[in-house]
Amino acid sequence: MFPRFWGLILLLAATSCNTFPELSAIRLPRDPPKPLGAERTVFACCNLRVLDETEITWRNWQSVDEFLPVGTELLLSGGPREYVLRDPRNGRTFNLDIGAPGDDFLEKFVVSSPRSSGDFSPEAREAIEKGVARIGMTRREIYAALGPPHMVGDYDTDAMTLEQIENFDTWVWRRGTFAEKIVVRFSPGMNLVLETEGVHE
Image (cartoon, rainbow, N blue to C red; front, side, top):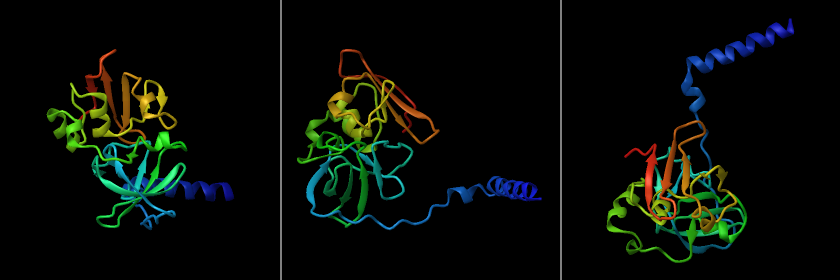
């Protein structure tokens, strides 16, 4: 009796998920994160993608449209791996998971001095503002536009510094767990994008 009972329960659950797929997409509201002790001023060194309104992570899913633009002034607290960022303009807060503890990894996301628009070529500024990659951009321009890649070559980047990432010619970002990837290939021995895949504007 009991095996048949539980089998029926499982069947009903599966049927409900298929009949009402929107139920699986329901997310419970989260309380905004609170600052973790003393805060210091930092600036986004790249476009920081925001997932579920509060989450910024080294995995850097590209399926979300919202991002904090490169150069955004923020207040940082916490560490050494998980931080809280607060936007002083509106008080909004974000969780930041940098992947591994240490300032070298934190600098993949925020820096102590703002980057000026003069750091990028005029042709790249529009792409950076849109958060997209284009052929002919440099490594730093691509990084500013898309943020840290999820993988370089066949390796995850959670425990890599920006300098180590820049040593690879193939950078990969994921749009989601099973979604299409964005791939950027740089010309070997040069600092320019040679080819892109999965880029949509």
